[in-house]
Amino acid sequence: MENVFDKIRMVFTDKSLRNRVLFVLGALVLFRFLSAIPIPGIDAFRLQTFISNNQFLGVLNMFSGGGLSTLSILMLGVGPYITASIIMQLLTIMSPRLKAMYQEDGEIGRKKFTQFSRMITVPLAIIQGFALLFLLKKQGILADLSMFNMVANLSVIVAGSMLIMWIGELISEFGIGNGMSLIIFAGIVASIPKEIAQFMFTFNIANLPLYILFLAVGLLIIAGVVVMTEAERPIPVTYAKQVRGDHVAGGTQTYLPLRVNQAGVIPIIFALSILMFPQLIGNALAGMENNILKSISDGLLWFVANTWLYSLFYFAFVFLFTYFYTAVTFDPNQLSENLQKNGAFVPGIRPGPATREYIEKILTRITTIGAVFLGLIAVLPLIMKAITDISAFAIGGTALLIVVSVVLDLIKKIEAQLSMREY
Image (cartoon, rainbow, N blue to C red; front, side, top):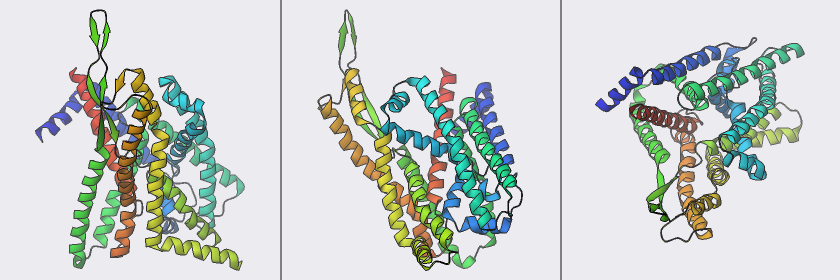
């Protein structure tokens, strides 16, 4: 405990680190202030009811940092930028040039890659903003908008999305930690007091054993998330000795860490994005008079309402997308080639194709563990709701993973800064 307090004291006594932390806090305060500025013509009661019953908007609300729940000027949040980044990463599979830019061209290549992501963010924000405004208008949450008011509101929320993207990048550059992650983290944490107040309002002493059980399960889940987020499978690596004149280099032994949860929270986001379409399409077709369309709507809404079937598909999609995203972001062939070029090898394994096959075998095994873990975290809130009939957020697992990952990353970044200060 003393060590923790010493580090906190060092953070605020070191001028450079203190300025970075204060910059982050100032940026997050500005973000929360802007999140409270709504666009005009909102029916607040209908908005809260609609978001609470729509998982798709619940996910978007999380990525907007809570801005969607008030239809603020930041209602899109960092969602368009995250979507653009995912699209760019997927394009690296189809374009060797993009792949080389992202993985081989160093800092200049990554800056160009980021610039392309920013450019894609603008049309994505326009499409997403128009779809949201149209959906909310149809549900009666927004007043009947004229064409001018629609364009004005759309311009404001697209500008808000670009502003929050800029604030996130400023946090990454002048603050500490990843700016986009911290913004999402701030939105999730900001909703905690409201949830506690709601819990206290609906508190029932008869359910006390159930509340204690929820608390115990919650603590176990948090511990499991921390362990799985930090878990690694080390692969031993030895560098061959190289004699240059009188100097002998190499001969050292190290290890290559492969993370068990290589894909992070991205597979859950992918799975949610696909599984939200049945609910959106079902709600859109619900008011149709055509019997065929109405039957389709009833079938889609029945699928969403059937918790066990929905959870099964949810788990399957998360499991598959974990493998997919790991394959996109981690290339065993390139890793084996880099080891061979640097005169390194895995003891007992021949360099080249044999090393690649060995790494692929280990990666497949640990990805299976990570995929099962992510799938269970994703469906756990749904299962608990089905068993206990107490409302739970279907995105609870995603929010928990983001919060734990951001806190661990922030701690590591602060410790790295403190280590640099000591040197």
